[in-house]
Image (cartoon, rainbow, N blue to C red; front, side, top):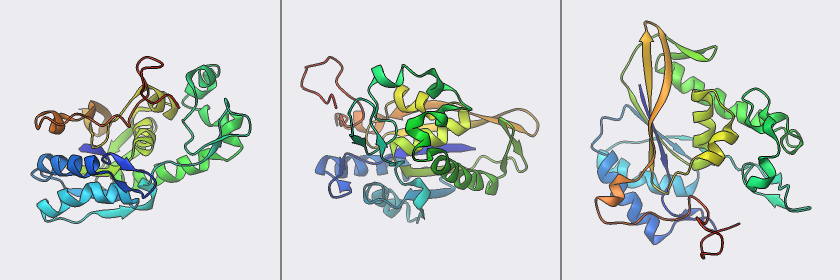
Length: 243
């Protein structure tokens, strides 16, 4: 099985849509994805993901299953570095704050930090994972411990048009790590494609492995520079995002 986690194009967050650059990225992305042999398309119900998927679906003559659980993992939390301040997403902590708590990197206990217990983030995480596992099970892969029991081996390709945060949530399940590891260790540029394959090294037992993360080759081959709204400044004070 192959899973494609596709981030939306350059976002207009205020309108929950795409900027003009984002619309161009979605078009270039469609030239890459539409010719693929995609078994099922799934898309977040948020406007920026729907707008990104639309050119691909139109070119492929397909429809997508709209899934609320693929919405961005946007649960406001108290941001530790701002007294009384909130972050609209649970992972937007400064490195000097989250790195003080090794618990956050623990696969079995990351959600026990007070910032997360205050809002019962584990329940939101479990909801997304439960929905995702139902999709995998429908294609023959059933969670069994830290691996998957293969009830029906297949080479299906599933495409998920969604968002950075929720992609990391899904991948944290496949890779058995805290989502904080991926939220703070990966960057997925707008319109990027992250590819994860199943591996069945013994009959009936599968695990998952990423072959590429945040790939934007569809932009480079058309001479389009990637949008910056995936990361923060490389060097403090160089004019790029710091907050």
